[in-house]
Image (cartoon, rainbow, N blue to C red; front, side):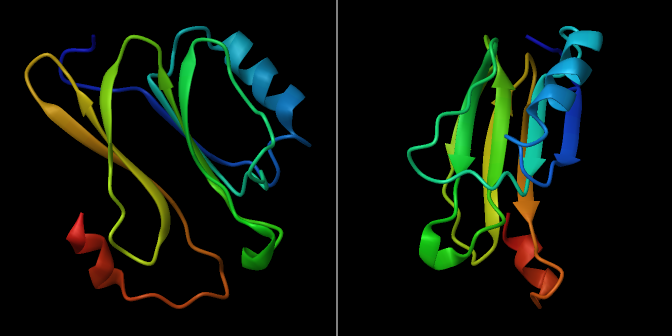
Length: 126
């Protein structure tokens, strides 16, 4: 369990299935480096399996009615204690609270499409 910091990778993957080899190569060259991985624009749909060995997954997929793109995926290294927080906003996001030895850290993985307007004050609700 990390003491007071986390190693986090954030990547707008523009389709994780289409870029999975690039992603796997990066992870292989950075073994055990990342505690949390936040991916945006996964393009995953409900029922589509995607897993990464050594990580737990929390997904927010778009349905067909939501459009074809978007989607967020947060991967948490096995062994880290975390809780998924309830999203009470209109943002496309996953929030988790990770337990470290002496504190908690909240990680928010969000995707805001370029065409979508949002009130940045909504970020203060986390």
